[in-house]
Amino acid sequence: MNPAEMAAIHAACFTQPRPWSEAEFAELSASPQCIIQTAKLGFAIIRLAGPEAELLTIAVHPEARRQGLARSLLNALITDLNSRNCEEIFLEVVDDNTPAIQLYQSAGFENRAIRKDYYNGPNGQKSSALVMRKLL
Ligand SMILES: CC(C)(COP(=O)(O)OP(=O)(O)OC[C@H]1O[C@@H](n2cnc3c(N)ncnc32)[C@H](O)[C@@H]1OP(=O)(O)O)[C@@H](O)C(=O)NCCC(=O)NCCS
Image (cartoon, rainbow, N blue to C red):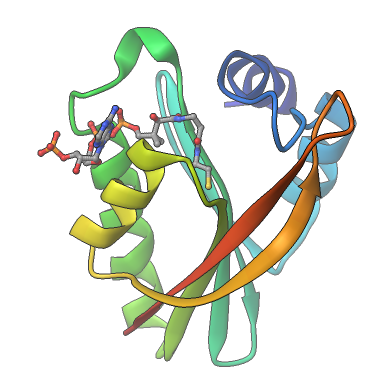
């Protein structure tokens, strides 16, 4: 999947946080710290930082949801991290994003912290971030 295709899927998935541009995906794709797992209508990106990994984003096109795609992307990334002896993976998610939070809980992530008013919405509204972590 190329950066333009990633940006198109991201735009179909996100308003808050804002969708990322093709240029941003090109930069992430070129980074040796990033691992990208793709499927036809979805992808997930993690960034390695020593013994930790951060899930930067996961997006499945609305037409392909509830078919196990995100779970399989996440599982593939976690298998990859285990082979690299990574110790934990963490992420931030808008605290009212029930589909994503349920996905992460079902994959064994636990709540670690709330970052109040962390995200700036399009009309000036603020949303809090839930920080979740899974030990590997
Ligand atoms: C969150 C998202 C990636 C899930 O993708 P998906 O491919 O539909 O998810 P899966 O089919 O793999 O579902 C795995 C589990 O996640 C949970 N889940 C997924 N969608 C859900 C929904 N709409 N409501 C409740 N739980 C949901 C369920 O526990 C599900 O397991 P189940 O189907 O056995 O009940 C997708 O909805 C999406 O792209 N959302 C917009 C982008 C986003 O919010 N990304 C996360 C930001 S941190």
